[in-house]
Length: 112
Image 1: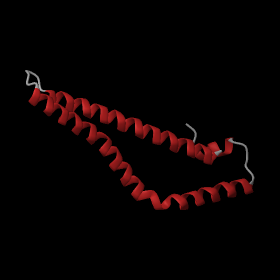
Image 2: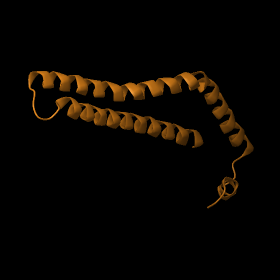
Image 3: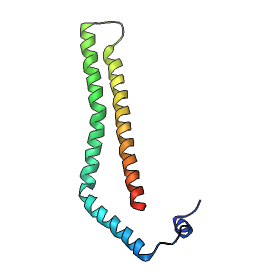
Image 4: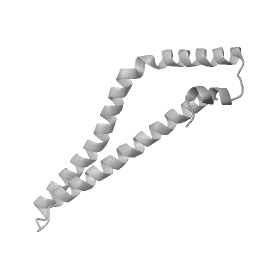
């Protein structure tokens, strides 16, 4: 596997002005986004947590309602709680994957 310093040598040389320009652009972008670092991360955790919790709680509530109206041998509450949890986890996974893809595309645009 090649080291990052070897990769830099393998690519065509960039002029000093291009190198300085790209570093300056990265610094400016980092300064613009620095205010959202901690709060953005906490917001993301909260959003992901709620995207799992809400379908789980809705499934449990629907299951309780069904168990009261139509009692049976099997528990609707447990089945719909698990179904809500699976839906919530899939929703969170989908959202995180979309955000990661956007971040990668943004990084690729910065390096281009």
